[in-house]
Length: 423
Image (cartoon, rainbow, N blue to C red; front, side, top):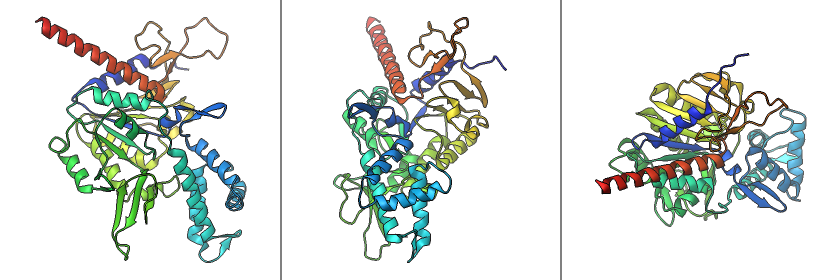
């Protein structure tokens, strides 16, 4: 077994330096693990503010199991899975199956399920999903707030861009709490409308359009406050608007729900325009993309990221992974072929396509306790130094990391001002 290892302190410093430059383009991709990292009181216990896919599946099963209207139909769907793979389906598997049945059932029925019943069950699952992701930030010191403060605390030559496949409004809440102006592709007040022209012009002429201090927020899979409706009786002109989370008259919620249709739906407007923004960000110049809470399980997003890294060697991506490497596919960890993609997990990393464990802990290092801690020993052997455990894959710790960097930046600025006054 090789004794070679990666140094988590060096990687923490590399990330710190990449984010410190005020001239480099910086973007964040925040996945479902970000809201799941925020604790939320629930009865006598603590639950994630918004659960990831397994927690969301449990919530949907619980609510449908309690419903006299939908329990019977839902149990028929679950029984079909007991005879097939996977035996423990997620909400993505369930919705995919329901939508596949809707395409083939026509005017008949399958195991007593008609097309109308399947459509109503589909709509109910989406309704439950919307309620779950409609949570609000519990206080003013969450990682979302720390990210917002970090963005607003450093003047940059290029705007910071935030990409997220999440439907929730947590980024918006944090931005507005700290008065961070942002553009999300919509224009207007009472019923903001999606304006593709503004997005395209902003992509090609970033300096001459919106001010740099305006962040860009791109909801890759839509949002709970996006709606679509036809503007004419012929149903030819579809309009997408951003308004409240309550359904407007004639509106349908505009979100890519977890199902096998995600890839096809992402090829439509406005989702295609959001993906193009990610593509454009990685395509030119020195670009730093930091992912957190993202498991690299969405192939249509991976396609854009990996293609961008291949086509632009000056672009780099720090993939902050929650938990150990064993939680992720071999295709991501073992077969990683992008030298400008650094995958940083709790127990090791893939750097320059080379996978290794983290090295020994150094409690004296300035990053120890912030991004790195001692790994809990698995045996009673105290004769060798403990290995490191990398923490930044947890959005909570990444928020603390950004807050610490901003604090150091403020100290440096104050020091420069004092030196200038003294001169």
